[in-house]
Length: 596
Image (tube, rainbow, N blue to C red):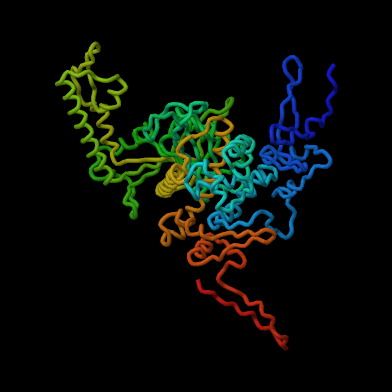
């Protein structure tokens, strides 16, 4: 019979020597099918010959609860644990490492943004106070924003830049960190970020494809790649707040899933995360009767762009009859010169059992643009003529047609008859019914609102600001270098998406402030960070760290973001001269403005 095991034995550390290295290890075990123990070594850090414990990545990325269970032998030197940010006591901060002089300005700005947006506070809560893990995640989030490089160069970058992380983030360390981030962490962050949203906040919903180099991930499939690259892909769905100008939700889907099929998962997860009653704005990719009924059943307010060829819309267009210049009965907006009309829609959906849900303030907003109508009609005629010429050439030369799907896609305005044996063209004619509908719908566009009291022009203006999310995706794929899926494990992929989400919150805030307050002074948001980069942090052993002065445009940047310049770095100086005591009110100390 096996010797009984004490409950705390799996948490007791012991030295384990492997070659020239000595590790502090535990020996957890699992039970096999025949009830036998299968032991493994778990290295929590290294040991010096003097038995000084140096925390490793296993210890750094463990939860505070898991760290507390570890039992260290008597006589071990645990002073390095006390130096960790999670255990550091308040008091005079002195630099204890080697003398350093590193770039810091852009990181300082991002650090202040992480604090002002509540991101650092939320991450600290998500990871149960593990400051080391939070600092490493923020370091990885800052890196692509300021460099535009992938993560293979992080450790080298840390040598010249002061970052929140005290650890050297080499590739193996980054992999271990990303694999430590779980679905629980993701949902916890959503719950905390949801508390910062307002009721009826406008949130754009859209997705983008990301090509993948590997083939081991479950979500990688062939799909409609927007970049037309011969690579499999995944689909990243993002909910972006048009009010706070930051992403609030993300989800990865298989690369072959259409946008309309992702709505149910989205609605379920935002409900689980405790999102308030926000307003979703979606394009035509999310248009379907099934999705519209889902919105009605859940009472989800939304603005959804719809196709004018949908029966619900086309029926209203046909009611105008022959359009001579403009449709009769539509009002015009003086500023945009767009005609509009709103229709109330009575729509009922059967719920569970015998319950019936009536759509809350469901309205169809129909618009007409006379200039756009002319362009649409010209484009239609050009497309019909180009297809006619191509079909005539195929018929004259006796060439074989492609498969039916290709013929339907390339010659959609014609009815083509062909010999089924050799697929040569027998005849072709214009599809008059289809062309007639297209001519009638030219110049029209439409959207549907649910649960909102908005005029047609208010709904159109809200929908148009959704373009901000398209710039978000462009920023993600260009500036942040996340245009490719570079992970090979499911755990690593989930962790890297989490870090990307954190990075995009910060980058979006930088871009928003630049766009609204600094665009006249700087050409791009990256120029804002470049201007701050020259500020340095000087750290000498046994001394308090110091930051070099803020001058010129750096002060304008701080003012635009609403951040105070660090003490001693501002160009204004308050004299510390001790004035002789005199009767009456003390003289106000003189403030001197230094040249900058």
